[in-house]
Length: 239
Image (cartoon, rainbow, N blue to C red; front, side):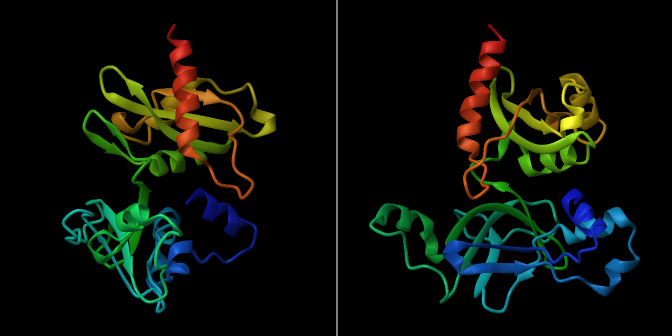
C-alpha cells in the first residue's frame, strides 16, 4: 500500500499486475472497480494492493491446497498456493526432470506463492511458501510485516525473515535500511513498539537489524541467503 500511495503522490496512475516467467509474464491484474473511488484512502489502497484476477491469456488459475488441489474459501483469510495451467506456460525446466515433476504435480503449475481469495475473486499474495514464518504454530506473512515497516517514515528498505527461537520455533526478524537522514536515529525497541501497535504480538518482529539490504543485479532479494546471515548475527548477539 505504501509504495502505491507514494507512486500516486508523484502523479502516476498505478495498475498492479502479477506474473511469473514460467507462465509467460503477466498472469493477473488488479482491475480497478468504480466503487473503490468512494472508499476511504486506506481501504482503497488495500484493494489496489491485491494481485487481482487472471488475465485473458493466463489460462486457468486457482488458489488451492497444494496437496489436495481443493480451492480455498473466498474469505480473504484461508491461505493456499497459486496454481496455473494453460497453453502459454512452460513445458518444464531444462534438463531437470525432478524439478519439472515437482512443479507440475497434479497437473497444475505450482507457483510457490501463497495467497488468499476475496469474495469478489481477487487474490492477494501473502508470501512465498519458502518464506512464510511459522511462529508457535501460527503463520506469519513476511510481506505483511514488511508492509507495516514501510509505513515508518525512517524506513527506506525492509525485509523480514525467520530466525530460530527456542520457545516459538522461529520468530520474525526485521532487516531495515534507513533513509540517510535517519541513520542512527531509530532503535530496535522503537521499531518493535511501532509494529506492535499495528500487528498482533506473534507477527511483531522480535529482532531488528539496521544494515544495507543486499540484492541481486536484477533487484531481487535472496531471502535464503538473508536468513543464514541474520541467524548468524542473532546467534553472535546471544553469546
